[in-house]
Length: 481
Ligand code: NAD
Image (cartoon, rainbow, N blue to C red; front, side):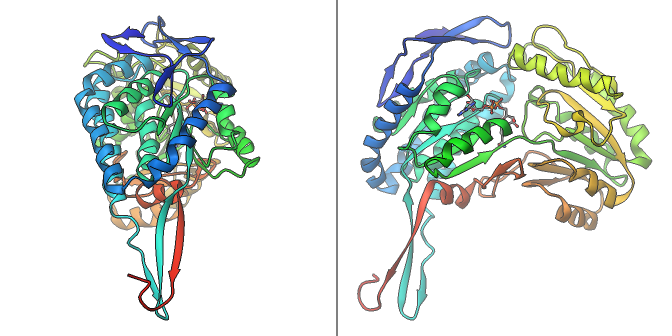
């Protein structure tokens, strides 16, 4: 047990309702000052197996627990998250370097909402009964079993609970493997589940590195669903491991999303949306990092955008005045800088930024003069690095927008509703935003086209994945009450 920002946090695993250490640990480093803040248990095959066994043991009783009771416990978890919101927010900020104000006002309230939303949605499931020649077809949403959930560091608790909440609501048990660069709030969540009355073994956490704990978990034959959020290369390894047991997968992966600005757009709105792509220091899967601007307005738009980007304040993520915090880790910073330096060598012009900014900061960067087939336009940097290309007319906008192997999201800014409908219909993306960004109803599907993912989550789509949906057909006469 250590104290991080005044909050007691445990670095052990959470298996079968108990804290469980490992003989080996690894350092958890804060991106704010690169100081070691905790020792985290370094799990492997042994811990993954223990957690799957605990989850397997807990499954039958949890699966049989009435849905009203499951929903009540999920609401109790949300209550506890709200009660401890300040503590969760500061620990997450110290652990992953994202802005405290965003954790306080956006991310942690959303964590609570994830539990409330899926608790309530659960109560609306299973109303799809059909009748054919007097036979009643009763559709039920049966829990699938043990769900292995593997999550990234850029919004650790929010992304984990986006999967944990529907998995638990559906009556499954869960083993979570959080990202090794941001392991702490998963541990706090374990404590919260106890307070909320979740039975032992229903929720488990195995800490550790992806290639050790994560790999063992996704290859485990006792796992019935794998929910993964992370990068494309890791998804390939997980899919290979899952193939052995034919374990169903949901993959929410990376992106290289376009933000398309038409000449008829509200310029202030377009500038505001463009600047927002530097949020979370660019470590956002959905970010519209490829700015596509109609040629007739490009010169003025670019000049104004550079002025706006120059106003972004880099600093300590705990400071309310900071707009852009540090990157997660020195390795990640070096990766970002590698992309930037190679882009420069390939002839791109950094209109602003283009270099590290001290500590783990990277200066918000905007490139022009980028070739359509260049690395910087096609590969996910996952940092505060945007490119700007110009287009003439809708056809070219769509062609450029759809030109990468990703298809997570797209944003378009236009003053014409007809154009918005036309262009949105032609974009390859799981989510298209028109004159807005990031707002999303949890009832709607979320996921990526092409290599940005497989499957959709949200509303019914989450329950489709985390359940074995069953059709029971009752013969006519008295049996179909
Ligand atoms: P990553 O793929 O490196 O790691 C994600 C998780 O996978 C971590 O917990 C890691 O430990 C684990 N892992 C690594 N190797 C593994 C293996 N062989 N088997 C099992 N687990 C393994 O991703 P990251 O760097 O943590 O996160 C950034 C990526 O996540 C970006 O590509 C980003 O776009 C993506 N992302 C996508 C979404 C979305 O909803 N589509 C949301 C956030 C982040």
